[in-house]
Image (tube, rainbow, N blue to C red; front, side):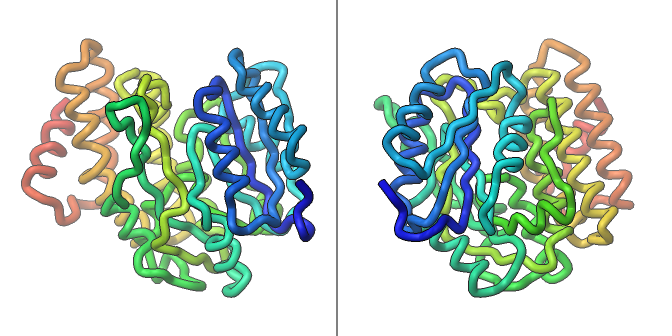
Length: 322
């Protein structure tokens, strides 16, 4: 298949042992209403059929290019490999176990073409097991809606601090000029590597756009192997807390106190309750100590708790006591 025009956007698709999902992700790319794309498929030394699925896709559609890592480098390394190969005006990311909605690239690229902004971010939903062997898309969660609804064009964090709640790599299209002039890359060897990078993109962008449209369906794997489903593991927790803290530091360093405060409020009300529930029953006391130290540091940096529900206040107090 030959695209009608030169590609305007490169989609970086990293994958490690996702043979059960990769074909669906690539099908969602081929189904895009905007056809002027190219994709770099990065097989991060998979042990299953992921690499073969990538190779087959490239053999059938010249818009796909495949890179095989000889050894596993992690999600950040795979994304960075793709970034080094981008030659188009725009860049996007799609994890190989997720899927785009059909108009995702049309909406995000179209917004940037109209506005001249550096970054466009859309809404996303969870793709959860439906109990019968398939997956069903959920609803836009409140924090995602707060970041993306209503639509805004040419905005900034000073004007729209809640945008900082959209911290994933794959809900966005950005100008490669933004990556080149900032030298941004994903940090190696860390889980939740996109959180800090997302905040750095927001703070470095001259302006950005947000769209309420759902552009990605984010898979929660039935087998529980997604990194976001492994927060009960202490090393994963430490990476998670480091990423949350690093994102806030990036906002503060860029002189965005309202965005930093928005992130603190969101972390305390959304992230912390789930982690505290895990901590209550965790067999390793180090889990509770790590979460307690993080919570105390987080509330101390705000100079006082933001407005929270009484239930959230109780969760915060419990974590601070650990």
